[in-house]
Amino acid sequence: MLKYVWNWFVKSSANPKELSLTLKAGIPLIAFLGLGDYLSANDAETLIDAMVGAMVALGTFMTFVLTAWGIIRKVFLSVRLALKK
Image (cartoon, rainbow, N blue to C red; front, side):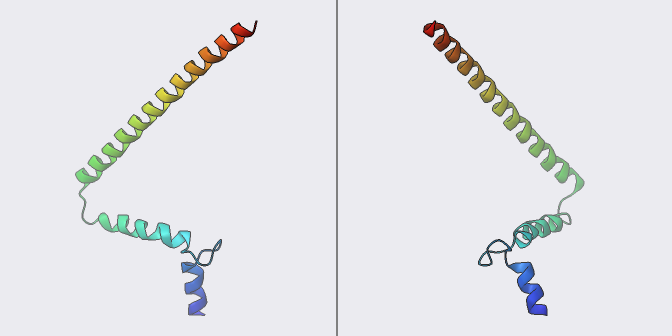
């Protein structure tokens, strides 16, 4: 019975030759939970601030790229439509 539970936990349901997602996600989760003993509240706030800053920068960059792509596409399609007439 213990072997069955172990295989269920460790092996992937989609592909039994692979590790399960539960285990793949569980190992980093346990590591992060263990970091709580070593990080102070200030360290955690600094880490969160850095992550939020990176996400805002990525979001800003992505919206800039999509906006620029939209403008270039709009101009290209408008010129192509104007030349057809």
